[in-house]
Length: 94
Image (cartoon, rainbow, N blue to C red):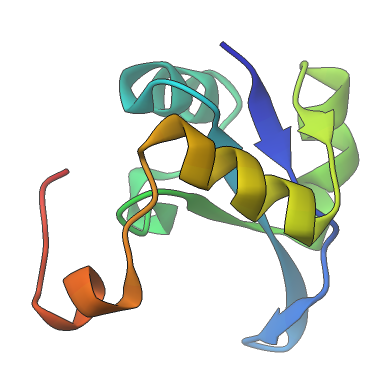
């Protein structure tokens, strides 16, 4: 299992955000997030939104930095990606 993080470049709430994903297992993603102080409310069906202030700390904890394109490619390959259609349909609890 590898935890991946993309560059903090998504603006919201007055700051930039990264995405934190697993390439194989949501349970391990949740465990990594919890162990590193990322609140569960940051989970969005297949990834965590994490503030730019956490980026370096998460890399030091073992997250592998990748480009946004690589993150999506690996999330798709894992089978964990939630599509826009599934999001609109209200998929929850995954």
